[in-house]
Image (cartoon, rainbow, N blue to C red):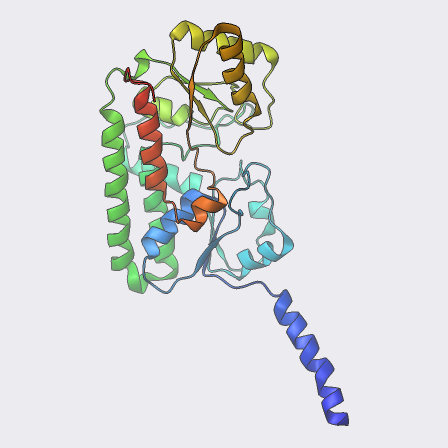
Length: 310
């Protein structure tokens, strides 16, 4: 009996310590784009992976918990978005984990694929657009960056990972072909009630997505003047559709819709545009993919270039 009483505290302490230890993963990522790419490339292989940004959470102000820092340092591979967005990323590494700044590696791959294009240096004295992934072409290069990183920790299955990556790249290229089919994309403004996340998409396809605020941060509250200017611009352009970010507050977009109706008897249809930082809890449970988000973006944007109203 005495031996049992002596053993019980040891067992209890062991159980407590085990409960405090976070689950180990081979790959830890920060945002949803690289999470979905890892999922597609790994496929049925045994590598384990997780995203530290919880579904439904805004990405810009996120910082990892102490348990997540342990997970990162226990992993073989840590994929983060950029040092501008995740300023904490490099400071928490205290192990042999391979930490990859995806923006840097994606740019290197892009430059190697397009050597004749002028290289655009980041001007750190000005606000840098951290949303580089909101471009189909860039995501193709991101897939290559993720593939290279995964092969680095598991070279034995390189052929399988490469084949899976090729499938994903081809599916992204098919989406890109759809966007390129939009006729005269600059002819109609696309009003987006949110912060400036679609500059790369505008540049890639010649679209004219006009954001309510030019700031790259969702924390920049729009002024009453900016809201009034967008209301007037929507009326002047005769826009049927106005777009919003599902991860930003609906207050402003609903105000714009309500003011247009009450003051001018002007009806608009509200549609989402996904910036792909993250997905909702329901989308995560449903295993929503980047391709599905891109398809919804294309379908919603293309409505601006038809004369149909939902």
